Image (cartoon, rainbow, N blue to C red; front, side):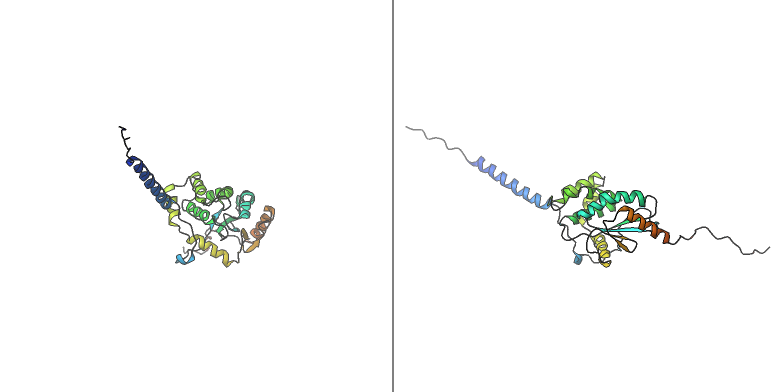
Length: 243
């Protein structure tokens, strides 16, 4: 008589499959809910705009202001920031003859630029706009549209590098308050800006490819025309006093 071969229970096997399926669904759910929200600049969602102030570097009382309308993903802006700006800071800003003001002008063609502009705005809230500005341009080839579809992975690392409070930064990025960025861009549109970088010294538009020597000459020339600040020394009392 042939003995029947005991049939092994498949219950453990199906249990493992079920566990894998549950884990997979949970992983997808976590991934969907933990991924950063897409960053958009929708004018319809912004009820009121603040005054466009840009971001100032240098002496606020300097007689001349150099203005840049820039896009963090713009290659020409990256070249201006990494090649020309260090010289401008050393030769023009350092002696107080001018200050420098950067205005956001994100271009629709650059898919990752809003992440950078928002990160810079969030860094500004912690007093570190210029640190983030410099890091974003230095690492532009790592987070731009040609390099990645997830710029936050690189940009968040830059936020850590410059020492931002991560909880505050993450909340700011999640809140996506784009009002100041839109206000800055509107200021550019009012001046007729259509591309980046667009540079003004005072009210005069300057070719962004101009040498720093040329920029300095213009600043020095305008500085000579600037009115001398009124003296804060109290005037002598020349009235006669009664004996």
